[in-house]
Length: 551
Image (tube, rainbow, N blue to C red; front, side):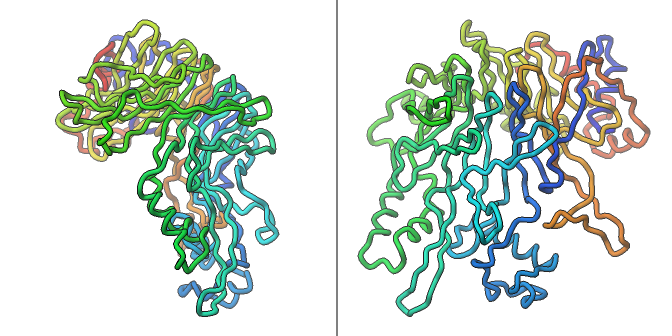
């Protein structure tokens, strides 16, 4: 049993009104990703129950021997076997990690292997979201070389996300007669929608130098929102000119790939909406300009970004604004994107900076504001009713807890993660907040007392109130092939790993877990200021407060 359950149990004993009275318990199901990668993260769940997840450090990635140069590796234990494609465990680890780093470092010649891949699951089976990945003879299937992020799905059929475009080879002979095979691509972040086996790129408004496009959310009317490039900055202009110079000594596309490593922030981006048809093809796109007109000589990088959209086509997100007497200060402000316009959601400058992250079909918006508490910036959740203009800051775990909402459903249930301890390092836990009941609860108090999982964040909730979340668990460490690592005594080496969970409400009351002596002793060793009892009481009272400033 974990510390947050100890806190919940003691708080129940201390308070005349039980904190978990009426709270619903959840059944826990680990998603079937453990054989795919060492760490797994839940991303979203739609109303059909389709779950999207990303996995980190996937097992058994293929080595393309056509791009493998044994002379580039000086630390292999058996280079002869490696050159023949027979890698022992240590050499396979070295090669895989080198090729993973190659993607991040924009290597010109190495094979690229992804450190992050995406999968769909129904809770039983897991399927690879191949995005722009291609099948090749050299790898015997997909390359698994494109770092992929998924953002959401709708109707169990339309999946959105982003990642790089495929890598391809360019053969070249330099001025000294050396033959070089470059391995490059053309775009680092291209949005996509995957419908069945069909993958359609979500093109940016301006695709100069490849551009950039990142989708964030999709609604039932197949409207996708996110952001994309609408213009380029000086750094990109200079890169284009440099790669078209007459004295260029490498191919133009290789030069452009090399330049992209340092100019991604030079794209001018705006919140963007793509309209899809029933086949997942883009039929139109538009961008939302800034909510104000900057001065012509103001060169600050003003951007905006749409994070969510409801079925009425109203999107929310954030954007950079200017404020102050002379407009000389700039910060983030929550935005509403509607009818082609971006408008600031909260007019009060005293609430800056703030961000909107989700909206439901009742036009209830969830977001957070950064506040300074004891001279430290903490994020506090707010609930905003677009129709009435009402703004509420619910109480979270304690006054200086930093809270990040992640999603809201049409039942007015919000999920996210928040700090549950005030000692450094601050520990985080997934929470569920019911707007109508005004209950802010640690998800760890709503699962079985003997659960091996510690829920660190809840990322998405559908209208069945089913939640997908991330949790830590202690289990055997595995190598790059997925094999369990043993120590010199033949014992498993244990480590803390992150796994993705599906949490389904079961209609039963939340469990009342009693702390063990070991857990109480462990809590005391956390070194919290004052007595452990006082800390638990403060946490309990924080949960009981109503409508206090919590951000």
